[in-house]
Length: 247
Image 1 (tube, rainbow, N blue to C red):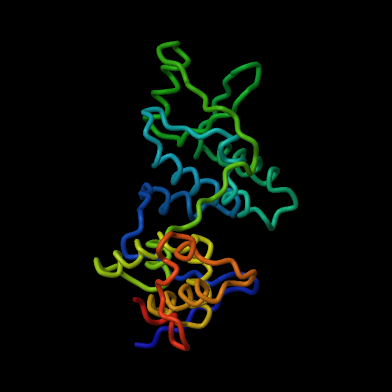
Image 2: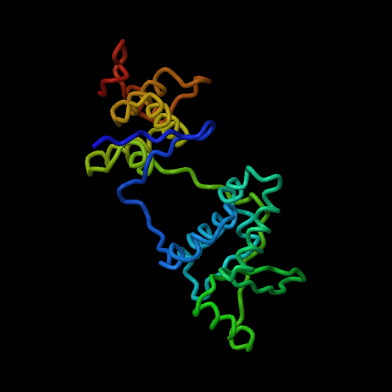
C-alpha cells in the first residue's frame, strides 16, 4: 500500500502528526451526525470546537465560557487571521452558534459591566440556567482580561520529542530531563525545528545541535545554561570533536 504524502498549503507549516499519548477531548456523536454536516461557517466551527475543548477542561460544576475568555485566547484569535477583523469574526461566529441552537447565552452584570456567558446547549446547562433564574444559585464570572493577553504556552521538550520523533522511552526521557536543565527552552524548540526541516528526526542529532551551540555560541554568541553553571565549564572535551565527547 502506498500512502501519498500530504502537501501543506503555501505559508503554512506542515503538521508533524499527533503524539502517541496526546490528551483527548470527547465530542457528542450528534456533533458529527447533525451539526458538522449543517455547519457551513468555518469561524463558527472553529469557535464551537474551541469551546468544547475549553469546557472539557473546566473543573467547576457550572461550565461556561465568557466572550472575554475567547477574545483573550491568542491561539483562537489567530485562527481568524483571514478575516478583516478577528473580533468581528468571533462575534458573528458566536451569534450564529446561538441562532442555530448549539450554544446558550446568558448575560450577567458585574462591577457595572455586562458579561456574555456561553453554555453548550444540553440538559445540564438548561437546568443550571433555570436554577440561576430562580435565584437558587449564582454565577461567578471570572475577571475580565484584555484581548490577546493570554499567550499559548510553548511546548515542553517531551511534547516536542513526541511530535517530531516518536514515542518516548524511559532512557530518552531521562536524557530529555537533563537537556531541559542545560539549555534554554527557546534553543531546544529551535533545535527540534532545525532538525525537522532537514528531516533529521533523531534525538542524537538534536543533542549535537544543542551541544554545538553551547560550546561555539549561537547567533549572538550567548552560551547555554550548562556553561553558566558552576563546575560545568569543562563539561565537554576541547578539540575538533569536543562537542561530541563528554567528560
